[in-house]
Length: 159
Image (cartoon, rainbow, N blue to C red; front, side):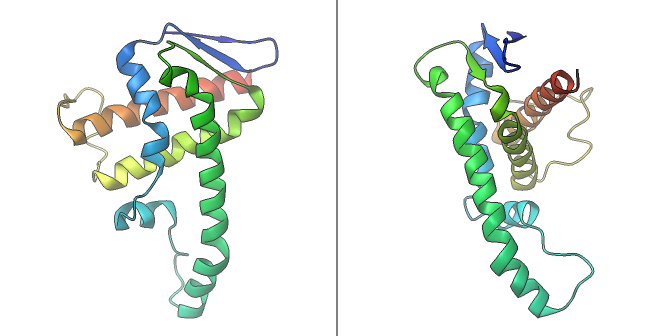
């Protein structure tokens, strides 16, 4: 896989290996909580240190819907950018103006996968083997790949 910057500050991904194509296509699906309580708690955590039921109710009423909308908008942008991969292409473009949406969606996916599969710090140890043949091992691999992509995007942005 090669990643190059285009003249507008976006990123062009080329010659992406088929296994990575599948992981990238899974980003949008991975961002959605599917009413999984652990994922919902991780993506929409209640305010800490407050035991006031009214505060929690206001959080659910005013903050969570806006977060959901922001998350879904980011996921939609990523889905559109990945469309070429669905058609069999081995690459795609992330326009500069989509960078925030990508960073948001990648972070959502990582948090959701970690919560859904109860991934621990020990699981994330890159020196430890993890089987990608099972769902949990694949989730750990996804978290690593999405983290690397986030790091690449952030480094390029900072340059």
